[in-house]
Image 1: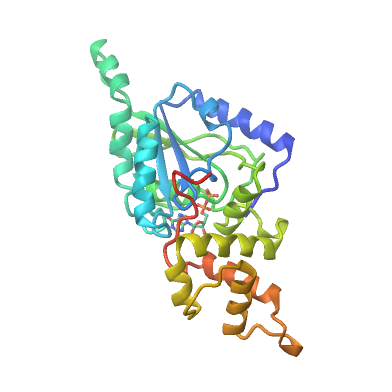
Image 2: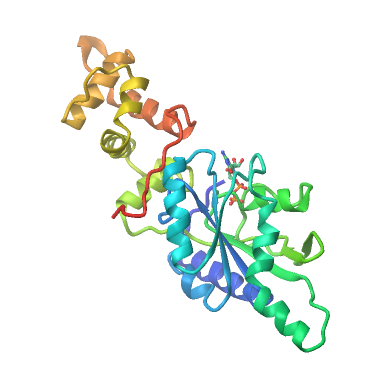
Length: 283
Ligand code: GDP
């Protein structure tokens, strides 16, 4: 389910995240590995300030592995711990607790220095809708507890999920709003399922996708749509794909809406292969 965000919702989400963060030792920030920057909340750094952070590049199964590697270094260089995971299959999820322990070492050392037995480290998952927060919480809990789909504004008693002996995870994630300002960011969010596609122009979004694929994944395009050459002009490319796919109206005119739909669906379903829409050098 995708939320429509209004200023009131954003203020509430911020307030709720701040409340939860008071209880927390380590922040787990969840992003989509295909668009690690576009899928970050715009004020996450301010909200999570002062807390050690583990960045999870989720849906890594859908992202380009070479780019994911570059993104791992990018986030490490910012001073975070980083893991690439596939929450759906569970790949990489086992390492989360270990990373959280490492991040909390100064805290546990301090407790030991005071002669205390270190308590479990408390963590919270934060991220925009649809990046996989509930899926991960369910995985870590080992059973179905977090509801798939978000309902901001519905509060319930907070509970802690024990993850091994040394980590406790808040059973509800902090749900934050996505970026809105930039059109390219909007297209990337819609293409990866983080915001509703209906609020964007389908044809424009597909042209954005085609332009990107033409520049970054030309071989994939050739293979998928059986093209021998990729036309320089993106509209020509659009028409070429339409003809190959038989998306023609009477008089042999290409049906742009159908082509746009095909491109969008094939990207979304992963039929085009593992593709990242952002690299650390993307503007
Ligand atoms: P939330 O809104 O952040 O809690 O996101 P959900 O956990 O509800 O997940 C949103 C969608 O992404 C669901 O359809 C999940 O099955 C899917 N999903 C979550 N993690 C992964 C992953 O690592 N790989 C893939 N392919 N899909 C995932």
